[in-house]
Length: 451
Figure (cartoon, rainbow, N blue to C red):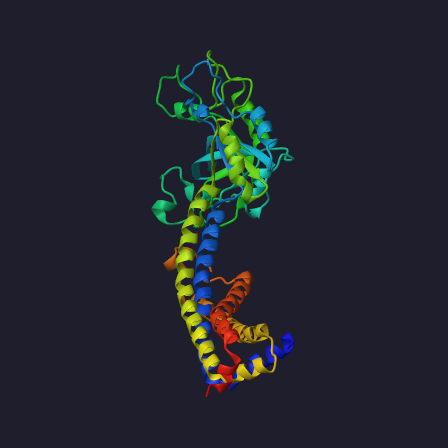
């Protein structure tokens, strides 16, 4: 017999016992829907974790820092400090899977506009780094600018306070009226001179207030004053223009925060606070981190946090999938029972088929097709049911309350539907294998004599 003949016979046999077939299929439906919904919850939790971590910053960025920058170097005084310099930046750029490197230089400044002022961090970065920052309004500063311009963090407005009263957002509950995009900011870079000028002293030792520089704002980071991200609390500028500005302000004097030689003089080169290494793919971040760590630098990326979260999510997903698998296992027992009952009822029919010369394998295949078809029907309907349940969960379950994150809690990708359908067919055929083998081994004469 051809496969088509076996398929037609199997379907007709199932149709003759409609109630039993429906009840058996229902068990597979419940089992398949349980697995898909449970696994979808695990997938949703894992993807929401990735989305939350990536919302704070890039998952393919590695932060490189050096203890020597802050005076914590090797106890061996003969060892050169492993500062992050331009030469180190060039070495990092040559590493495999690295598509870009941005040095970072931070300086504390005082910003003023009208009656408001703010002590803030101004961070110099490369154009590549600036491109990574989500832009809300305006535009990003770049190395092509003729003057220093700032990309202001979205939460910077609430850091300003009234210079006379000292009250700001945290005291009044109102966002200070600072016009970033339309009015320039007056910035004081020499904070040591600023603090010294405010200390009462005689006229001979009095320190003059430092010069204020007018620095415009090019753009604002995306988000409101309530949306935190890695770029919320600083002003970002192009690092080359920042270096030029600092040398203009401090001339031959050491730049605050920069290491000096034994005579207290400024070094001939600039030492960066840290560097941001941009990797081409998430899967390569861990390998690049290890290489940089072996070079003697401190490394950190969000992949460290993400890997821990993924392990927890996978454990949850395995537990949820196991719970759903129990339901499908019970359904498999139902399929086996149905097929065994079918053999007992059709013993005489099987005997006649054998006497007429039907191949043993065809008899076995007929029962396997029947059980597989039960699995297929149950799997298909179970997938539809699981999608309905998923929609209900996403509609009424508050992910903000359950997980602290926003988004769909249940997510069913296409591969999960296909895998569930294939698994349901496999379970059906596996459950029908023993009954099919029993049918194949029945004695023809004993089967014909069976009443």
